[in-house]
Image (cartoon, rainbow, N blue to C red; front, side, top):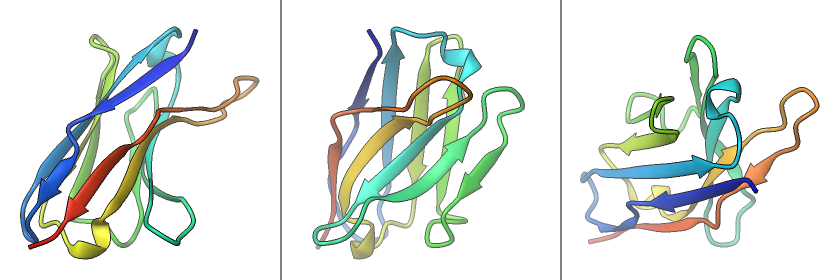
Length: 118
């Protein structure tokens, strides 16, 4: 079955960096776009970044442009989110997501906590 397992979260000071990774299994990874979402306390889940399957084109939320980078390794079935210049407002639970694509439904990882605080 499809599994998405996040790793790399934790506590970091403002201005610091973290790298999240998502290990995917149970499907042909290279055929699907992948994305990262986050949910801050008391707020709705929001799209942070997306990467397409073929050309590897990327798209980012305005709030993270220039600070976050999404990438994928189709040989290792992983998608990563490099987060630099972190701000307290980046705090939340980050989710790896396989978006709905054609006839394929979406899937979610279990989520991983990122806390930006001094």
